[in-house]
Length: 253
Image (spheres, rainbow, N blue to C red):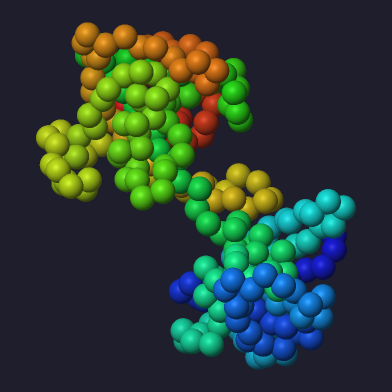
């Protein structure tokens, strides 16, 4: 294991130091030139944080690997008031003087948001897709995928059903979260999980939609979906490999 750093964050503010470990310092957004290692802005070490007299609570550690170099970043919550003079975490990405480990550390803290839908018919069966590429290649999952920028997770689930399976669905929205109230039950389940040492935090929204798809043909998307079939609840639970899918089916069906 190479150098170890501490990622202290509070309400969008992050503690950064200069090459000598003195801080807090802030990035300059848009700076395109770095005058060598001595000018870099970076995360502090544990000894440097201790030297600043900052008390903090550890949350978790992430592993960051750049080629042959391996780093450990420990994430924590500082026990201080709002740190006015710390750096906004959103300002790190555009400053070339910010150490890549610090930028990668902030990137790891951004949620990866996915949205899925449990489409059930009048027989109580669940429509599932067999994935042709990606992480779940050859496995059965619920229709869904990444939520696009400025898109509501409910809208993303409807879009993914159309893109992956060629079916048009309307998920109930009794509270009008997407702007227009749509009658039906508020059937949704939200989950959050970190699955490995890299520390990527996945947030999954799963919705339920009762739809027989009358007059519609299920057409799996070329090169993305190998097959699509209806399964009983028990069959779906036995086939599903995603922990998010399994828990959502248990809760919503």
